[in-house]
Image 1 (cartoon, helix red, strand yellow):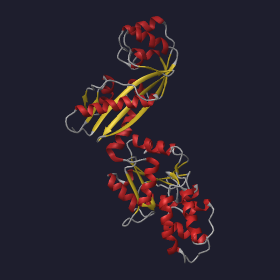
Image 2 (tube, rainbow, N blue to C red):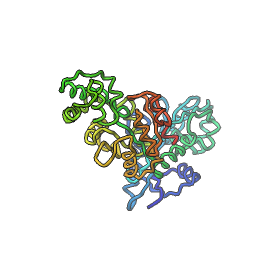
Image 3 (spheres, rainbow, N blue to C red):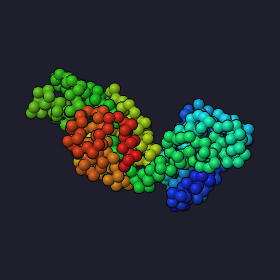
Image 4 (tube, helix red, strand yellow):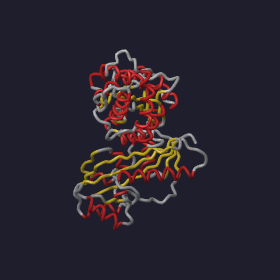
Length: 405
């Protein structure tokens, strides 16, 4: 089954996708709709996922892409589903008339067995309606099979005062949002992240471990803020810069301090380490948009994996690459290109996020779109001078960049 499979499609979703040029087959869902989730967004995404998973169980063989979707209407926190009868429809329309409500649609694109979930919200304002207008509309039966007891694309359109958001979402399927995620999945898009100063605030950890190593050979600890400019190019360069700052300009103690630091850092690599605010949600948002996500660090490979797993858990990132034999460290493009090859994504379809000149030079050398992040170790000027194509002030802006690519 090579084409798109649509799980339990309503006539409206079927028509929207057909007009947009999609070829698909429909697999009716046999699963009972179960409301679960704390927010309307969670509820519709869970309903959509249930439909897609049910369709996957019903078809023979493997389907590359299965799509499930579900729409709800929400007024003052109450979910208005399809009316049970005309009396229920009358109650719903009386409550909606003259007020603004929200329409949520959740979509699950099950691509090669992995679910990608997103939701869309549209605000809809209904003009005041006379009682006879409500009853007259109900008698047409146009809204009896629709959430909220109305259909915006039919007779009821005369009562819609305004909408804020995607019209097609109210019809029952957020086509534009779907097309962007579907494109990312089928064409291949990836987001590659630096670790220190981009995903994780590791400055205290780096300073703590390096200072312990310095003190063990008789030097005074250095100010934590200094390490913003010492880190980013691997452990050896970190120690080189710290020794020079401590007065060992000839690096006579470098060979001595390296194994000491390695032992200390193995135990203390998570000292006060935390993901930046909003970064966990941003990474998940990229996955939901159909992006593959990866980490590339000049930290040693085993320590990179330890930090990523501790902060994000297993399986969040599709690839994690630290410093290893055979792959030159950044700003060489070796690691970035190896990640792109393993993901099956063209370098030009990769976003690269980092906080230092080393990261931006890596992105340029690999032919990736370099995005400089301003919450990390270095400043705006360094990132621009090193080839950043755009800068972001907070993690949430990453999703806006990804949506435009």
